[in-house]
Amino acid sequence: MADSDDGRTYRGLPGAFPYAFRASESRLFRGYVGASALVTLLVSFLLGSALVVLVANTLGTAGGSLTLSRSFYVLIGILVVVPLVAPVLLVARRHRRGGSDARYDRALAAAGFLFVLSLYLGLVASMPETFVLDGETVTRPEPSGLFAPVVAALYAIPPAASPVVPAAAAAVMGLVHRRYR
Image (cartoon, rainbow, N blue to C red):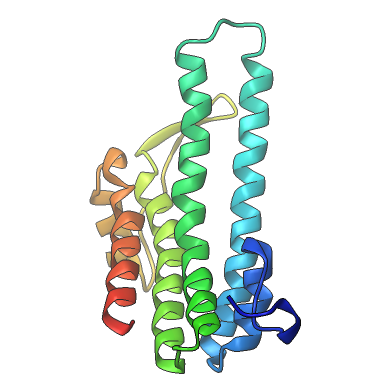
């Protein structure tokens, strides 16, 4: 392991972000470092807030299925955050070991941006046809505009199968890493 005084190492996840940003020559990857940091913080805040609300709403009840649902929030958070930070960690590790190039960085950044997009597309696919909002039954909007065919295809996915969209993007990220390493 390199000496920490030469600026080549980082300490843990928070240190990997500035290290990868400085070490990479790819502007696309540098953009991904910033975007993934913001999206990771946003997802962590939203899931953490949801978990706090869930715990507060179920505080007086017994365990059982409520404990399982609390754990499910944590599992979802892990399944979302790990692929968001994986490109940064992989590039930082590769640069630390001295074997990286801009092509690898760009490919992982593109796969990372694809995963971020797939999170949004997965949310669109998970939207039920009708739902209750503030006591009112609401119907999802009809697809229109330039991306109407894409939205219609996402609406055709059963809501229970919507996690397949980000899972496929995470699999692509793994394949990109294997291809360019």
